[in-house]
Length: 81
Image 1 (cartoon, rainbow, N blue to C red):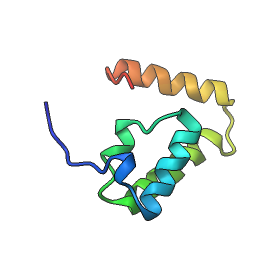
Image 2: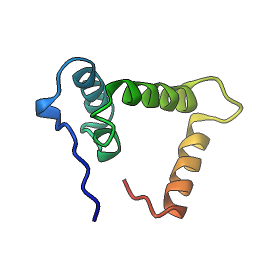
Image 3: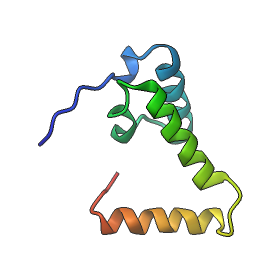
Image 4: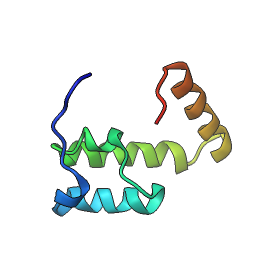
């Protein structure tokens, strides 16, 4: 298994802490997919902006359809998080 240095939520400060706080509000926890970006808070923030635009922005797909697509793609890629 690979090992990647991460900043845990209780150690986060500044912009990283803000992103972690938003993640906790949204999902109740900070998932590893966010933690692996923790050494570069700017990249994490950009990634989350893209996620929010994709999942909540204007689209021809409903929110439910977008979630369904994300779930199917994750399943097909054996990503269970």
